[in-house]
Amino acid sequence: MKTGTLILAQRYAKAFDRIAKNTDEATHNLASFESALKNLQGISAYLANPTINSKVKESLIEKSLPDNIARALLLVLIKEKRFNLADEILKQLNVLLDGRRGIKRAQVTSAATLDDKTKTQIQTALENYFKTKLTLGFKEDKSLITGLKIKVGDFYIEDSSRSRLRELENILTE
Image: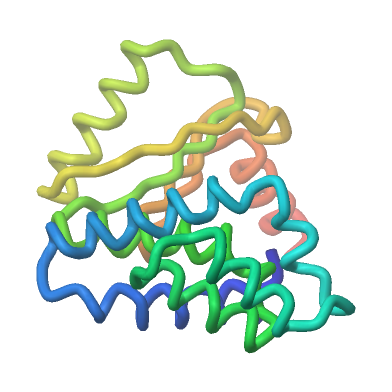
């Protein structure tokens, strides 16, 4: 996703999240938005199509969804021709809700598939280091050769053969 699109999605998500007075209400609003997107799944390409009149799409949403905060957000997205952001807004709302709950998200990239025991060990080590609950995402990147990349918020560390080879190349070319 392009940076500009991500920033827009984050802005809509933050505005939607601010409406909630507490975590329970934020959870309810998120579930409502997620449910609305599932209900519209079959016609999402139609709703994202900029050549179709916004009024027609707004009418379709008004008839398809109950009158709630999620429908209001979707109507704004249609009016502003930003329905294509809906899935990314949902992802950003999940991140914001985790933040309300005191949970940080982390992404762990490894050169090979990690077994459950190793994933648990990594999670425990990171939670002890950051002194907070973490939700970890794991993915594989064979270009690392060996090792890991870990990203938690602004914290980033890469300890892989690829990064060490890059360091060695820099030293040799200086």
